[in-house]
Each structure stands twice: as C-alpha cells, then as structure tokens.
Length: 321
Ligand SMILES: Nc1nc2c(c(=O)[nH]1)N[C@H]1C(S)=C(S)[C@@H](COP(=O)(O)O)O[C@H]1N2
Ligand SMILES: [Mo]
Image 1 (tube, rainbow, N blue to C red):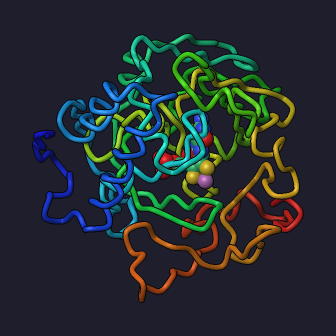
Image 2: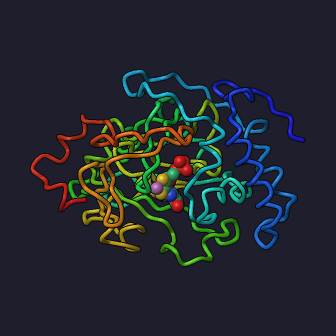
C-alpha cells in the first residue's frame, strides 16, 4: 500500500471522509479496468504523487487576496478535475495525468511585445516572489472549490515583456501532445486548448500565474507545471499546462467558445443572473459539502470578487457573457 507522509496543509487521513475514500477506491478500480489507456503499472505512481513524492513549494500567504472560505481538501481538489486532454470524466485526470512530463518545459511569451521571452519553467519560478492565495474556483457546470494556489501575478510577467501599443488581448495556448495525453485523440474540443483575456483583465492583480497549490508544486491533473487562475471567471478560463502566452490586437479564439459559442462566451465572468442556456447559474455545489441534506451555496457576482466590476463598466454583461 502507499505510505502517506503528511505534509504542510495536507488533510490528515482522519479528515478524509468516507466519500473521498470511496472515490479514490473507485478511481483505482477504473484504472485497473482502463487497460487500453493505462498500464496499471503507472496507475500506482500517479496516485502515489498525491502525497509522497511531490515537491514542496514554500510561499507566503497573501491575506489581502485570500478568501476566508474553508479550503477544499487536497484529496478532492486532485481527484475531481476537468482536464479534457486526459479524458472527460472527473476522475480521468487523476488517473492519466501521472505520465505528463513537466521537465524540461518551456513557455514562449511573444506577439505584440517589445521583449519576447522563451522561459524555462525553473526560470519562470524565479521571476517573482511566490505567494499563496486562497481563491474560489467556480466551474461553469455548477460546482466550486476553494484552493490555496501558489504563484505570482501575471502582471509581473507582462511588465517584463513590455507589450506594444497594439496589444489588446492575451492568448494562452496549452500543451496538446497525443503521446502523453490520451484525451487529445478525442474530438470533444479543438486542440490545443486555448483561452484568452483582455489585456486589462490579464493585468488585474487577482490574475495569478500559478505553479503550485497546498504548499506543493502543481499536481499534473491540476495543470502542471504552470497554469493561469482567473478567480472571477468560470473555471474553463483558467487554462492548464501552458506552453505559450501571446499578445494580440484581436480577440483570440478560445476552445470552448469554438465548441459552443452560445454557451461559452469570451468573457465568462461568474454571474448568478445570467443563466447558461441549459441550466441556472444562481447556485453552486461546493465540493466536499455535498451531503444529502447540504444546501447549495448562492453563487456570488464575479464569484465574490466585486473589485473587478470596474473592468466592465458600461458593458452589458448579458451580451458579453
Ligand atoms: N488545458 C486545459 N485547461 C483546463 C481545462 C481543460 O480541459 N484543459 N478545463 C478547465 C475547467 S472546465 C476547469 S473547471 C478547471 C478545473 O481546474 P482544477 O481541475 O484544477 O480544479 O480547469 C480548466 N482548465
Ligand atoms: Mo469548468
């Protein structure tokens, strides 16, 4: 069996609920069954990284930018994921992302900038001081988590490359490697997964270039080695495993917008008053609180980050959904 060594911030075994245990058992059994995708030999190491082998990443908590919410357990945050490159089931990323090679890894920063950069991930880690920030993450599907992310403001990187006067948007391109990512064979989305922000959104102090969580480097299933976290937008805007950041004059194409333009707009700000065409966005289920009698939570405007409202003054948020 796996030997669990408790680490900083990690939930103790005694805090893990029967549901979590049942889930991880189910994931393991699925792993055994899914022999076409995974040799069971690497199901074990993938699960082992949960506690024993992942590298610690110390960072000071930034209280100003941290929510008071009770953090979601590490077990939940690493076994209930959306990362379609590894499959569309919530358990697929935990099972299949173990094989993702995150070293060496380079990120290109290019486009409408005066000083384009090609950065190795280890150089990126040293670009600015790392901070821990507890952010809510609200998936467009109606569930949410509260996760202590580690990273630094994307604005720090943007400052270094000096955007030209033509730069109006930032495009994020993520890895799409068939050899490492079984989900890329499926045609659910156009690969590579791309996302984008307006330059002022990208420069907002809440927008976090993220390299870790729970005091450790990012688990592969959460977007290692580097992702973006935009906490006032639906989770799909927070692209995982980024390889390129490009500054553009025109609004970038994004994978979810291409897949279903009526459902997933470019802005996708969390907004309880604007329903998804197929469901309400007024409330959400906090992962870990889903007992039979547990009430759903009310979804908050901009996911509870009202300070971003000024970015959208004068805009009709029903039109720019
Ligand atoms: N490359 C990539 N990034 C992605 C996704 C994806 O499928 N591929 N899914 C998105 C969605 S829908 C959500 S809700 C969040 C989930 O992040 P988490 O698994 O770390 O909670 O990642 C986002 N980033
Ligand atoms: Mo999502």
